[in-house]
Length: 555
Image 1: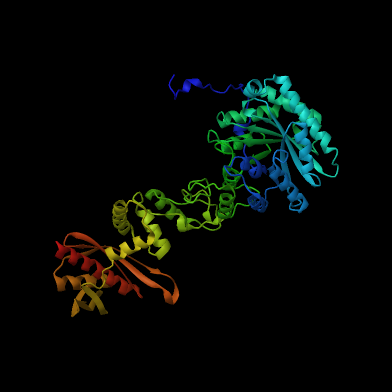
Image 2: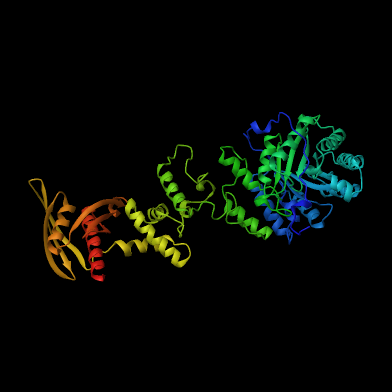
């Protein structure tokens, strides 16, 4: 057998599902969120959080609006025990936030856990044991009944210890660890045995948490498992069904979403998906998925840069620039066609209509981003991207023919430098290539007159600082000026296209004009700026003609 050989693996066994409901369901509200950053996320770090980091992460989770936060495994770690005590003794837990702690189904650990929680107003105690076939047979060397008794005994121990602390509002949570690799009927059997001990009611429900401890199949099969569980559980109205998905196959968020469709009420996860191996379900991604569908996620993700800063500081882990929704490059388009579509949509988007912008599933401003990073230009960019950055940063609305010509120059420069071209460089290239309004010829002044429907112009120009008066006529000032130049210099020139607009408003406004000429059979573009549009127009013609003359002399 080769080292890399798929034949050593087998697909996960499933049960046939009849009349499954989840494919026709819709998510229409946020789930109950439970952060496990301070426990599951923390235990997966190369260097676990110190006290300062734990406190900073706690503050962030509370600020985001998370109401259930698993804070540690106090029976297994003195730092976790001390952190729980600090939260309780220093009154750090808001009245609407419930802390959660994890414990194995062992008497000594359970007793120590309740010591750590002494005096807490409300808490979730989360007990677990593994139920999967491989764990039963190869780790615990036990049968189905033996593993079930571990769960039942753990549930009874929780109930017994809780009775010693009647002033606390206790919520019990049980996880059949490796649920996704447990026989479907057996998972229901074990959980019902636990529920029989706790005797929850619709008014005081317990939590059954269904972990995909190791993601082993496609999200649709996990949804089938969750729906099967919900359908076969005897006291469904007295139980909050929670899911805890991992990302071994890269589908933790998808599995959690489909589990919600299948009947789950609650989701456990971490910020940015930190966790064992490939990580936990990413709370930020799932919450933003809901937000993008018009559903209130009920947690505040409007400042993702703060979340990223705290996350990186506390975990020592980076955030990928392509991370869904909040990565540095998420709202950046390099493709020319994408850039062009974004620019056109943004021009049409109205403040009072639903968001409809191609390639931008949400308005970046909703989460503290702006449009400064939406379009960046490299060798893969086209005219749309080049046009966008010039309009965004310099107010220049280039006509299509000028977009095409400039984009080709930018692409060539980007390929030469093998990288991104910033807007300042693009603007400098624009001025260098198309604005030549004073060398060798410049406009010093002009007079316009109209006689018998014909426009007459007399323009004072300087050619290499030599004053010249030129005269011409035509239909409009631009046509008359081209005629005057043709007569003076003997160049055959014709206006192919022309565009102008204002930059800014009021007394600070400036005019810019663009012209496409055909000079001696060759097309040439010119642009120019001035305080009034007519002067800018005439100067744009001079720019084009200067460029044509310079090219002819260079040839």
